[in-house]
Length: 178
Image (cartoon, rainbow, N blue to C red; front, top):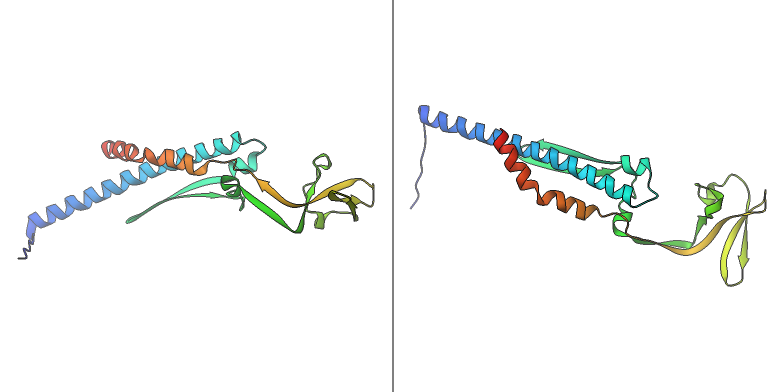
């Protein structure tokens, strides 16, 4: 058995208008809750980066959130201006081909060995990693290693999960506020 109910005239228009208004109210509240959640995420994630140590302003300010509220779609996007930032959320092993040339800490170098502004000479040391030594000042600049293990330093998933676990409360408050 099928039952079809059609509302026409004033009653149908009134119900349609009420449903449209209700739908708009829901989407406004959802958008408001999403903006609050995005703000909480951005603050929490930036604090997480700052607490990891050795990550300065570019790392902290590079994390942003954006809300798109275009019914029937609502999304919160978290991005970072440093493309490989997520590697510190998971940890990883980076391997060389065949070696990674790591600047020695006391040199203050921030460029790859291939971009070094002077000549470099490889020095093999029995049982120890090889070095690249500057031909200008004859001092070691880089050490060659087969791989580097990066530890998990960020906790992006935990921060996002914590914020989203309170999304229903943000939405309920936004619905009450109208």
